[in-house]
Length: 215
Image (cartoon, rainbow, N blue to C red; front, top):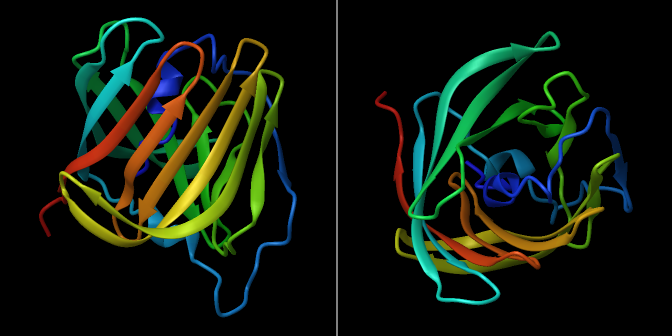
């Protein structure tokens, strides 16, 4: 699954949750032979567990090594729709509490609801059809979230090599700060690499291990 904004969510001044959001698209999502199926880049199944190695570097001081674990813990209903409830736990870095994100796969793509925003409208995190250069996002009172599909690249992590990863450039703007993020999502796997940069910290997250639930 996607590590997504799990690190950023822990820095509450950057991601204050607000009610309501307006989803926008700056380009028409492609449906030609080169279009990517966004749903393939975020597998969701109850019991799935993904572990990451995280390096967090403050503006001053030494880098800290940490680990993150994402778990698809259950399916739950919000506003009459069924979502996968995904928790993230980080160990090795203080003051980073557990968080959760809700995901709902659909014909249009994968929708998302952030923790604390359960009564607000969902927004489209991964469209079903993505062409390189497409831009989309969500506008909230607490800030703007902008995504751009920039490339398809191969990525090597401690958990292995992953071909044809979808690289997303993400900008999260709030009244407190701006976070620049890059995500690499492998088909059938989810996020395998992520980088974050803001005035509070920079970090690199790499996939370490995936445990799928028993069949």
